[in-house]
Length: 215
Image (cartoon, rainbow, N blue to C red; front, side):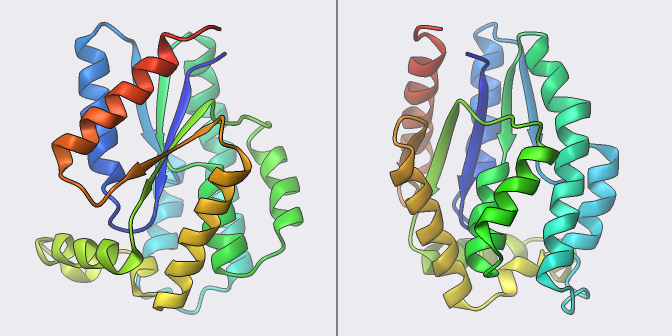
């Protein structure tokens, strides 16, 4: 089994902090690791991300948003993820296809069957072998995100998804939990409301168990 590991969660769940900590830990233990993220894991993806997350693009329709994420994923898989996996590296990816089902299918209300078909095409049917879902109430996550954004040189640069209504974020969270419930062998739900070091210990344990397992 190829070591394709994804980190997912609502806004402010701490997944991006935890994935960096895990990368450092794995590298220190002689693993060859590639840390990447969606949609900005390639130069083309970063340009797409500039469009997707810009708060001035509040009029972007859900279908445009979906296709931009898919365009970034197609490039990401072919340029970064597939080559790294073929070289036997551990790929840690901050968001992947589960985010599309949570944010665009459930959050935006787009057709999940259509999302699945196009995702299969763009992703070459690559699927994570292990997904860590960082779960906490959306109010807590948004409060965290707000504190983080307040520390930015330009707080207005914080992405537009954080400005969505609470109902949107709750739909996203419930969709993530439903995905995890449907695939318990792939998902590990991490209680993201705890202290950073406690969470990091859980993450390391789950990932090392996966990497040392059969196949």
